[in-house]
Amino acid sequence: MAEGFTRHHFGDYFDVYSAGTKPKGISIHAIKAMAELGIDITAQSSKSVEKFISEEFDLVVTLCDDAKESCPVFPGTTEIAHLRFEDPASAVGSDEEIVKIFRKVRDDIQERLLDYLKEKYSIVLDT
Image (cartoon, rainbow, N blue to C red):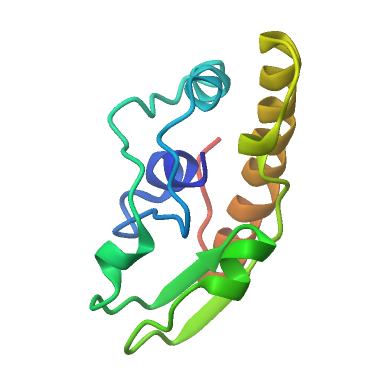
C-alpha cells in the first residue's frame, strides 16, 4: 500500500521501489482497500529486499519493526527512516474484519507517509 500511495502521489518526483524482508505476495485485501481510493496496485509484485541489495537509494523507509531490525544496509543510502505501522498481513477474522484492518493501516500510511515525504522534500501536492 505504501508503494501504491507513493507511486500515485509522488511518481513524478521519485523512482519508487518496494520490498519486504518476508514477502508474502500482494494481499487481495490490500488491493481492495486501495481500490476504494481509486489506486490500482494490481500490477505491483511482492519482492524480497535481497533483490535490491546492490542498489543505491537516497532514502529507505521501513514500515514495521521486524523490517527495521532485519533490513540490510544499502550502499550509498543517505537516510533510513522508520515509520512504524501495524502489519495488516497478520490480521485474522472474517473477510470483512480483515479488510477493516487493511483500511485502518491504509489510512494511517496515507496520512503519515505522505506527510513525511511532503515535509522532507517540500512538495506541495494538488488535492
